[in-house]
Length: 176
Image 1 (cartoon, rainbow, N blue to C red):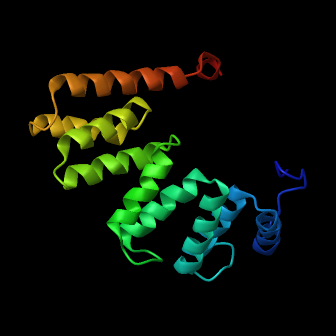
Image 2: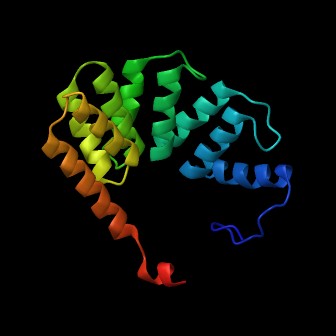
């Protein structure tokens, strides 16, 4: 059943779309983001329209969707549905990262690294590694091997990552 309205989950695209659009009309940020994805990728019987997807991501971000901020960053970074603009991409990633979006923080680290700002890159990557982003640990390892990060930074990232992974484990789930 739907978590919002307790009605059965639709078994066809038209009914699914109708249900999502009802939530969008009520200004639900995650429904708006989800509808944006459906347009962006051409799912649920919708014609692929990346511009419409980005418009809906923008609306969802204004309504508070962190995932929409991230997707706007990716769209601007790669020029999908909008003109490519690295500065805007960074702005969206920063807005999402300060709200705890791990992949946005990782992307900021990668962008800073490409710009040659290795200290800033490692700081971003350390934060995302300690939040459980394995790609960030790997990026710091590569930075260490290239002499752009210290052994202590790599050790801190690895330990922080492992601690986070350990915290998310469930003894009850492991027994089941």
